[in-house]
Image (tube, rainbow, N blue to C red):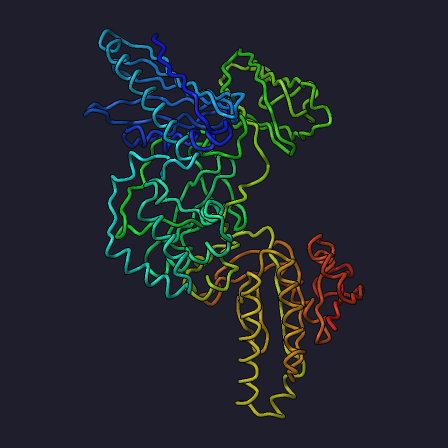
Length: 600
């Protein structure tokens, strides 16, 4: 075995360097490694073994990629065991330490075990080149973080040229439809000069955060760019375990209710507001970047996993952890057991020992010691008493805050207007855990038609629909459908739904409209379906929202107790005269508590 290493000092902070250096798939691409084909063999006790096929210098290599080990933002490493060939095994990784001046010391290392004399020679070449190239990449990342360069991964940027003429035409078109030439130019510049790997995985909220712009503005820009042809819309089905995209579709009708993750070896159900992510890619006619795979197990692909350990049979591993406050989950795909952990700073100067073990013959994880509550500084001891290697993860329970979900996008009026043909396939039902549903109707519409005639009344109703649609859109909602004189709309945020309802009633008063609007809202789970070639919703929450509207007397807004108790909506309710009452609702056995909001 030969050891190769480089130790460099960077000016950027350890946390900032980690966030870019942990993206091993981008790092591998930057240092010139070719794409890799991965296959998976399910393990009987859970999870899978990953095998990689790669061609380098015209030679075909196959190796088993063992699970990564990492602790954010301290280190990561991985072992690759080769099947045949001159190299038996390569173990490599990166370690980061904070320096007193705020900078970072980075150690990049590789241990290579040769299988024969040729492998001894190859190890020297491969070892020196890999650690040197990674060190150069780390310095480029540091330069980018210090704003001394425009791209953290510069070597691969020019490999995929841009059709500048076509991009310029689409930039002009995007500026026209968006009404904002500045932000249209910014997106075009990103397409023209951005890191190639980012071209196939454009995440609007992450891009907005990087640019310092409003998230919804950038999301709408990307939707318009997809409509004009600069970008392509993508629906990604994320595994709840590794949270990687197991399937990607350009149309919503490809989304399925149940999916299999081969790397985790689990089946999972899809929910619209959790694991269906909306991303974008640059249209191949503008910049054709192949969507190749360069790594599958690095920490950059699973940002929710704070620490991951590959524990061998009989191994006892001690690891120091510095954690943030919050809720975490300690678990393993190899067993059914898991442990929910709360981290707080009440004893931040102490260290808590967590003992983990799998007893021989057992099929569940066993935890001993004070493991349910940890301090910020923790010594975690993992003890594997089984005969099988086990992957243990410490995961944050929160999903990524910069993930745009299908529930969010499909509740935008722009999506309904621009991508109305994107619907689920017939018979597919997708769960939505949280959605706000609004129903409206006109009071006394029959008398109105008799008094004013069909033509005049119809125009009044159409104008009313236009007013409602504009206000609903302003509050990040969307009209699902109209039913006679009624409207059904959805919002992701119940507070925005209530704001929209109140604003509609105030607008009717301000316009001195002869129409009297009844409105009701409820927030809860639902099922997304295809109905009459539209993306629609059904379920108890939908029915309850419709019942809220029927309790409205006109000029008011009636909401369920669940909405009234929501912290964000409760503060709004206090600004108006609210009348709680209990009523019976058809289809519901017990009486229902509701609140009537009088807007005047």
